[in-house]
Length: 282
Image (cartoon, rainbow, N blue to C red; front, side, top):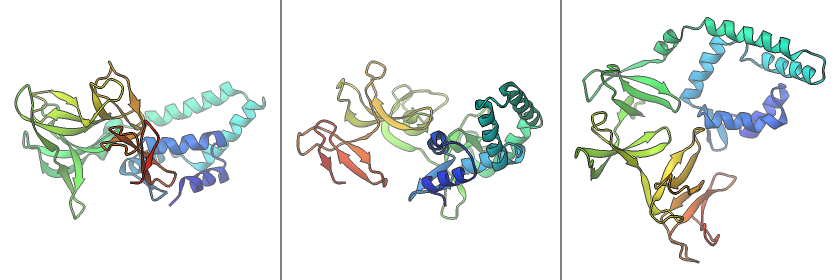
């Protein structure tokens, strides 16, 4: 498996990219969840494998090492004044346009759909595997009449099963159904189990008060690019955010009521007080 360093070395040896773009290439495939890092090695995700197969099959003339290296050379010639950029863009546009027109997206989406044999607990129809920007999920085949969805998990034999949402003791203030914790595009949140009949939601907090306003509590959020950060549940009145996960532990030096989890270069973690900077071993 490649590490980030050996992947960049491979790109460089094949004439792909430039030193200024290597970091962006690696960050992009991580942020889009095409790969994951385990023990400093890069492993493809299911989403990454699916996207890769789709692109290399349907856009083989573009998604190959030869095309990328040749494009770099042609861009260099434009910069040196030895080639016309208008002709290059026109040629590239026509190539892309012709390839896209050949693709039947309805057929492609149908091929990505997997049957599971799992019955929908709301209408009884079969649940099928679908894809979103964050990966696979289970959806009712009766959509749009039934909008039931569930997260995917796997049993001991590797078979797909529905991951049951974590239930809370707290009841929905609107309909008195159970409240559950769900994962959304921008992180965890609390929702009514009676959705879509009841659409009550509220932020999932860490139970630690915001140090800026003192009214809201820290909530885990996710940016459009998939990066996790922590903000105040009292947003937009309070716009306090931090990139480090708050931990409900008092600092032994200044008695600040929480500390933050930080990462070292080797991905190990340590705790640090945001007020006085005291470092705690975890």
